[in-house]
Image (cartoon, rainbow, N blue to C red; front, top):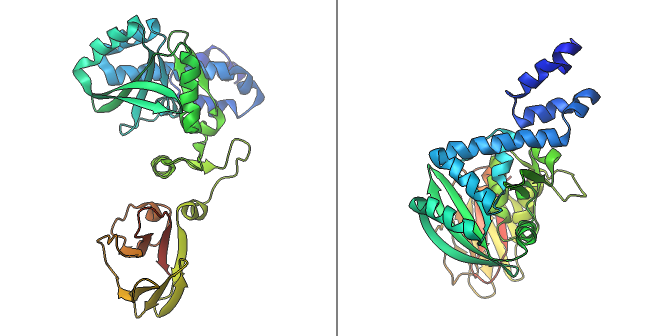
Length: 324
């Protein structure tokens, strides 16, 4: 039995296994943990990265890889995560970073037929010229960096976003793969940035991909669905017969006979149930949720709920009204 599992046959079997399966096998016993060391798993991930590149780019894949090699280009982000997990996310974006060297002309020429638009991004003093492409149903971003400290700036760009599941870098020329949180990604776990304006979009996207969220690299406790909901909303449980809820300094919600009203120092009581048109002059806006795939429903809230938002755009607080 040992000759079958730990002998030459294992090398053959390994070629048919995804990186996730190899990693899982490495956790079953000490001997497999030694055989499938981290570097060996990384080599298998690189095989999957190149295979996925060929699926997307087809006949252009070899030229793309050669161009990335000569121009010190790197592939970053969750495209590497997909290779690790053996998954394909057509709604994701393939991110490539490349220096503004001689090689950039080759990749721009090769990708010209797929170009959709171009722009310049400035993030925390990092300047990237971005070219957006659509290739066989996949979105591709090529970020051009003119800095002499290319590796530092790419790393700074990833750390600026602070999304662990996307902090992966594949250096094509050196065939080197950097993964910050390998174990957590294989377990489909990642962090949840606290102060990023796109964190809600990020959470919803990866939650629907099956990811759970921990607090930080130091604190790996997983957020519950209730905790995730409370990060975005103040959840108010209502009774259908009568509830009186103070939701702001000068605003009170009154629920009576299945109707919702609000009172304010600035306005007389107004009946606003099922008001789906945002009135910017009103101090509070309540609307019936008609989107059964909304953020709250995704996290297990009763689909029959109301979204309550401040009517003034400069304010930033959100309530979720749920029947008891």
